[in-house]
Length: 232
Image (cartoon, rainbow, N blue to C red; front, side, top):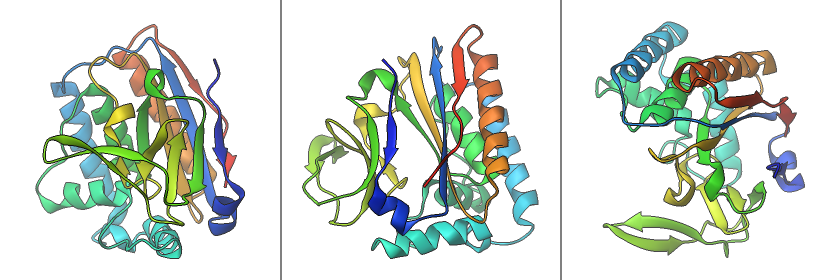
């Protein structure tokens, strides 16, 4: 079955400069974080420092554009940062980037090096197609709080990714739910690279190509496809 990704008209109107590229992969081999993955994350932090050249992440034009869109749908971008800005801030703080598992480490490295929000979803856990919408506020978001599963709901008007079972990621790319996250058992995955103008689409395409190359190296024989960029 081919996964469909759709962006609602309401989101297109909110962010006409939005572009996303999907990378799908089948036959992956995941596992614990490795020395090679750690080296990629360390190198990504170095590349980020060169890119920013002394600026804070939110001063980068691409991150500033994301902040404007977050504000437009009612989020407070200094409190709920997009995933790329949050990782970049951590990379530059001295705390170091988290080590989660091999696949997550790979896409986090791409996110930090290119300053692009990147998400990873387990294709076998997605129900139906993926949709980027402005929430009504009734959609379920299953998460974990204090060690127990709990159901939250997005704010009305909040931009969320969802599938037929509910929200998979709140506030566009702020917080992913545990249901579809990549685990060490994941063998098929969707990676989503998201950008806003003024970032050139060619920059996102280069990041997607680099991610595909890393996936091929860590999972020889995997079937990896980089899908064409799609506008907001």
